[in-house]
Image (cartoon, rainbow, N blue to C red; front, side, top):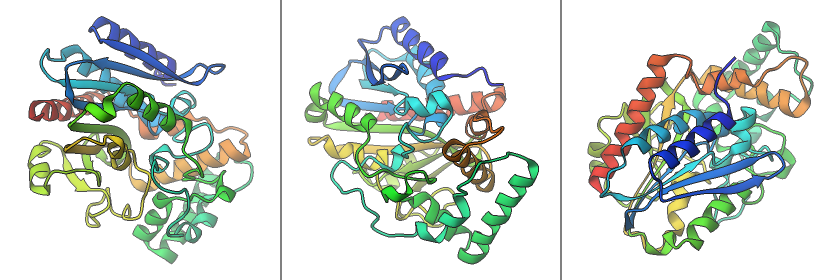
Amino acid sequence: MTNYTYEKSRDKFRNCAKMYNADILDSLVIDDKDDLTIDIAIFKRDPKSLILHISGTHGVEGFIGSEIQTEIMKNIPSKSPTIIFVHGLNPFGMKYFRRVNENNVDLNRNALFNSNFKDKINLYKNVTNYINPKYTLHDTIYSRIYRLYNMTKSIIKNGFTNSKRAMVTGTYDPNNSKCLFYCGNELQKSHKLLKNYLEQNGYTKIVEDLCLIDVHSGMGKMGKDTIMVGSSNTMEKEYLDKLFSESYDVCYTHNDSTNNVTKGYEYTRGDVADNYPTFFTNAKKVISVTQEFGTYHNIWVALELILENQAWNYGSTNYDNRKLYNIFSPLHDENIKNEMITRGINTFNIVINKM
């Protein structure tokens, strides 16, 4: 059983923000009855320069980002950009060890502030029957083997990369609202609240230099970080390759079909790193990335996502969501945990020293 919970991570975040003299500590309420909040700690420095550091977009992945944020707070320089830490953008997913939010929506496909929520390309139909069993899950070794068998059939029929591409591109069709990789048919509350907060406090008009780091986990080599560069960047590729050269890998989310992490992401929409910079209307310099920490092989990650979605939406006799937590947050291993935190701090420090 893991010692990490949403409540403990949130308390640690709040306590660190107070201990290390954050200028502002705010909470945006997602669900008052269930005590779900997005927490924001602000270290006010240069008002025209901003680092926006986000954890928990994918809920259960948020514990790594949370640990990185609390460590960074211990050494905020007196002269720096303004720093906004956003803790638990998807607090429901963090609390219940889900990757999606309270509406079964993938928030990292839902940040469409200036676009409609419709499938522009319907690849999902090629895999839906293989990844969305619609009956009660009895989680046994036999059910897992059978699900792997169905995944293998999809790979044989469509190819590995095409199967991955169809899954991660997802679906905006409300008829698929209980399906894996459902992206929603309207902007979700988390995005509305955070966007409104940034606008109402003037950041979207004042900031000229912007860096966004959205921390995720699940893809890539165990414990290593891949910097996935979003489409909103204004900097040249050569500059970014050099800037993030200490990371394990640097790739370009929609334009790097050779990289094992981003391969298949050509058609994804609604990414946080792509879309949040679009409402910073006066930002001239933008560096916006997803920092993705590797855990287990794509096959095992996909298998657990399929089983968890089945159990949550169609019931289960014995599934425990901590199994999904263990796939995305291997923090029980101190060496892996420390490497992830160190890499997260290094990326933050590299950016802060260049702004």
